[in-house]
Length: 120
Image (cartoon, rainbow, N blue to C red; front, side):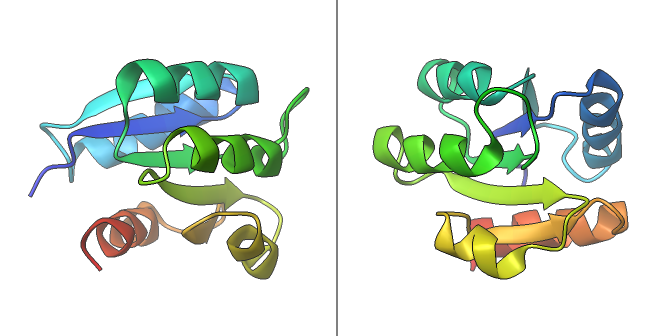
């Protein structure tokens, strides 16, 4: 089953592009939306109603934890996957995230995590 909308939030364009390209193989029908920081991500959540947000933790301005907390208020059903070089799975859960994937992981692990948060 294809994911309808995936929001990729990272302050590095090459990271966003890499995630999108890696996920297109498993989700060819998905609509990919991108945001460069927390404020942009909140705007995209309101405008695009994503099913899943892949959210970097370390961004200038509003970090991923702050963005996730606000996303929970404006779109409680959105699934949030923290995606970071920092090993923070416990903090991610306490901060409103549904899952954590390390940037050192394979694209397959990210796909598996998306499927798990969307479909149980």
